[in-house]
Each structure stands twice: as structure tokens, then as C-alpha cells.
Image (cartoon, rainbow over all chains, first blue to last red; front, side, top):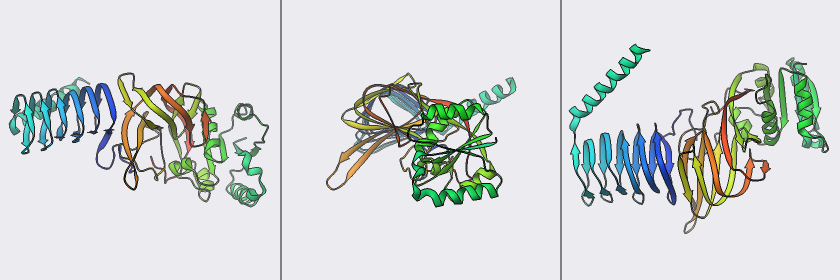
Length: 136
Length: 246
């Protein structure tokens, strides 16, 4: 059943189902679930979940992410990144916090910024927003 | 003339006589009666509506099924006339608008007005709730940027607003957000059941490059092909019930 909220019950706004192929630059505000193929870029200010059978040749930016599929490209996560045992990541990773399960494959540089970096980012973001408001 | 009631062609059947009598009595009691226009088999809908719109009524009410209210909505786009609806029988649009046959008279009397988006197909046809496109090996472009394709049979649903019975995942369609919710549904045969795999996107425009086999608007209007679907924001004023889904 639908609720009257803008996003779905689980906060998911976009779903790329299995056997669906996507090419292009995808920008979204809400949560994204990827179970198919993506070529290009994905940017969301919400949650990103990449399923076990998903295959991405894409640079990915998200607020939080859980990755269980194959990703060829850089991954930037502002908050927490969870890498599950089935994940295969070929590219650099940057996140505030990372959890990597046993069995996951990662070929690339992994930068864990920690909580301070996240706080600095959110403080900078707040400052930008305040400046924008003052300008208006 | 404040109100014009357009009766669906099917309502000339005697089995609807009692329902219509009760409806007309209730509308008169509430002081919102008006001219009744009965569509006949040989009436050209577009001509009939054009004549009624020219009379500049406050409200034109579709009495009947989803196909009628959908076509009427298309005719009222950009006009300063409110759309009303009295659903007879099961109605997806009635569910979305929070209107049943029992509550319709009260809803019309309450005159709760909202401005709605409307979907357009190839800039020729309109839909109020959903466009259902049956495809094979479809390729679509979303908002001119994102290419989406899949193999095999798939149904593409472009949804402006929907009733509560619709249970797919993804964002909730809203008739006033200036966006279409596009779903790509594929049926996969399992051991005992058929599972539906679903993709969901929010967009303003869908271009269908290939694969269309059938197009059905608002569950009852079949049109020949569809190349482009888009949303026209805030195109129509409609009377809705308090139990609407948006």
C-alpha cells in the first residue's frame, strides 16, 4: 500500500531491476536499489544498495551504501559503506566509515575518512547553506 | 449553468436506472443539480464536450467509468472548468481521487478542489492515472539522458496517480508533483509462481525508442503506439474526496 510520503515505505525512490540495463548519468535525491546493469555514473544524496547480481561500470556517489555486487569505478560515500561478502570492487573507495565482510574482493585504494571528516563535510555544507540563505 | 453531468453511454442500460434516479435526487437535494448530457452510441465525444465547454460551466462531472473521466479530463486541460467524477462500478480513478458512488454527491457538494498534473502521449492523447505499455525488447530514454533497455516481454507503466491497491515498491505517485513514476515490470516464471521483477524511476519525460506492441490509457482507452510520454504539471482542476491517495 502506498503512503502519502514522497518516497516509498523503505525510502527507495529508484529501482533498477534484474535484467535491466542502464546507460547514462543518473542523479537522484532518494534511495536507489540496483539489481541490474549500469554504465555511467550514479549520484544520490540518499541510500544506495547494490545487489549481489548487479554489475556496474560506473562512478558512484552516495550518502550511505551497501554493496554486494560488482562495481568497476570509484565509490564515494559520505557516511557508512557496507561491503558484503559477495562484493567485487575494482576501483578506489572513499568513505567516512567502512565495513568489509570476509570474502569481499577489493582492488583499489581504500580511504577511510572517519567521523571527523564527515563532521567537517556536514559543517561545510551547513555553512554553504547559510551563505546561500543570507545571499537570498 | 453551473454544473453539467455527462452520462456514460453504458448508463442508458435499464439496470442503471434506479442508481441514476437516486443520484439525481441526491444532487437536487444538495442544490448541485445541473444539465444532464447523455452520450449516445453515435455521439462524437469531442464534439459533444466542445459544445458543453463553450457554455463555460463551473463544473463538468463525468458519471460513469474511468475511460469517460479520463477523456473528459483531457478535454478540460487548460480550461477554467473543474472536473467532477461520479464513478459507477469499480474505478481506479475513483480510488485515487477518494470518490465512491456513495460518497460522490457529498464530495461534489464539498467542492474540495486540487490542481492536478496530466500525462500526455505523443502530445495527442492524455491520461489521468496511468499509461500501460506492453512491449517486447523495449528501449527507452528517460528525461533525455538515461537509456534503459531490457530483453523479452515487459510492461512499462507510466503513472501520474494511483489508487491504494497498487503495491509496487518505489516512490509514491502524486498527481501534483509534476512528475511521472515509470515502472518496468517483467514477469519471470518460477517453479510454482510467476514473480514480477520491477524497476522504478521518477521522471518528467519518457521516450520509447522501440518495442511497443500495445498502449492502454487509464485502463480503458487503447491508442495506436506511443513514442513519447510526458507530464504536464498543474494542467487541470478537479474535485476530489478527502480519502484521495495524494
